[in-house]
Image (tube, rainbow, N blue to C red; front, side, top):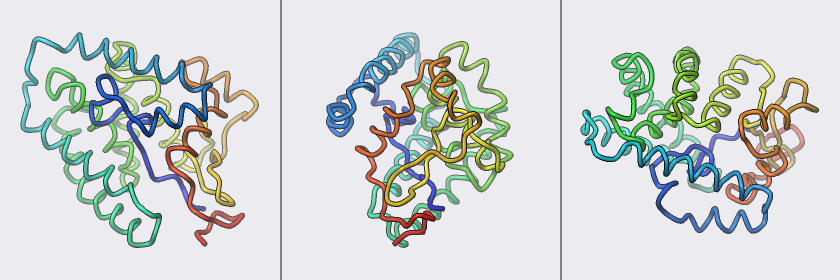
Amino acid sequence: MWRAIVAAVWLSGAGGALAEEADPQLDAALLQCPGAAPFVEADRLREQALARRSTGFEPSEPRLRGQLLEMARLDQQARDGDWSQAMVEKMLAVDAANLAKIRQVVADHGGLPDVRAVGVDGLRAAWLLVQHADADAGLQRQVLDGLAPRLASGEVSSREFALLTDRVLVNAGKPQRYGSQLAAIGGRWQPEAMEAPEQVDQRRASIGQMPLADYLCVAAQMFPAPATDAEGRLL
């Protein structure tokens, strides 16, 4: 089965641009998926509020912040392609290079670095790198275990919490809770196995996330699924 291995600002909040800069690709997607618009706007407002709370101080680890932003840039660049085997190999190579570095960051900080250390954009970048660290499920679980206080304080968004929760569950061979992890089946994005699928929108609503149908709509607009057969094999 060909799993979704892409992420973008609307999904991850990485790069620090969500609160301040327009995203024409996302805006175009929302024209096709209007039900998602209020949720995306709520995310933007939360990011703006966090950014305002973070003004007035310089990150205490500016060098690390710069490294995280560059690693996240390479991560996203590697996922912006034609779904060819060469693209996938490049993406895996970037992930492997980033993994060694993000392991050390997590070890040094006992989890994700905080906003005062690396800024809002640095924290978002660190989260993204962990989200894509599928070769180290233990690292992902460790970071997830420390997200609850960050969620309560607003440093980590409910979107990021849902994405990493589902990633950890899927990587452990368990049904996901929020339907965020997708697989390309028959050329369309579909959620991987979910616990109690009939209740997924209730679970998503409980953390302020858009209905699954809207999420799938935006995903299809932002990242057209690769051509696959009914078993999820690339054609």
